[in-house]
Length: 418
Ligand SMILES: [Zn+2]
Image 1 (cartoon, rainbow, N blue to C red):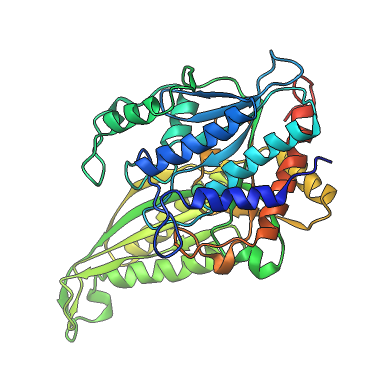
Image 2 (cartoon, helix red, strand yellow):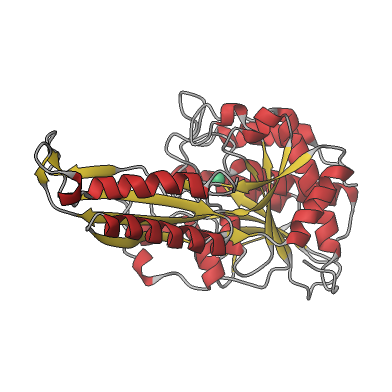
């Protein structure tokens, strides 16, 4: 077991919450602003004071390294992000970054050697609210390059991405510059759940199985408008009748037998939209989510075929196109098991769960085994200044991260590695 200093960690969370603090108790520390730079600066100062090596890459991802026994092994990466929403909370990102730094300090305090180096990371611009997309830092790290289109991006407040990035890099001259992307043994991220299920279940740790995939469809069904009173059933080509018949069957076919599936019609419209006319054309959106890409394909296939069948029955035409497709990410089982075991070692209950939101771990998982540890947040609130995590849950999350770090670092250079 590696003892951590829970008081130090909770005090650090307070200190970082003061950087970009808002009147309502939250933080506004959007990516590449003065606040973001201030938080990076404080973390780097703390790291340098402990004798750790501090470096950054051209995307302003910040790294803090504590050397392992074998300097040739790829490091175990642990961390999260320090940027926030404009009216964000104190824990989204900061918790995972500071818990990771607490693990590094605890290793140092205890004089514990690890097989590979342990590197704390703070990814640049996870939130994606000032400059989109989100997870820019981890995406570029995983891709090994900065996409050309990002250089000319302009922030919501008018600032240029290239200028702000350069200022941020220059604000930490002590950090050694390294090229983008390097081999990684594994990546672990503690994060608040940003949802209500852990708190509701009274369980302090969520072992994240993966991040569900999201796919959106645009559906248009075209029939023939006609008089509502004079047109008998056999004369109708009613697109709304076709669409609603298909959808009611789909609700029953997709979700009830599959607790991981999400099927949502968020928008539906009929034209011309007259009370006493059969519609000419109906449109709807479909939002489908699932952690298994094959199930996502099946749900899409079922949606297309059911709408197609009902439209044919009504003599209508159908057009269906994808407007968004984010593939799911499944975290390696070996890492999930290691986190579950770490929770048992800490004598706390844990539960496997899915993440409904994107995280940096999704992108890191494309190049290295990654996993996440969720902790409860009050009322499931996040992206909100009232976001709150009980200090005891902060400590539990960090304890589990500490044990998982020891276990996973020990597999570096062996065949048992994740
Ligand atoms: Zn976050």
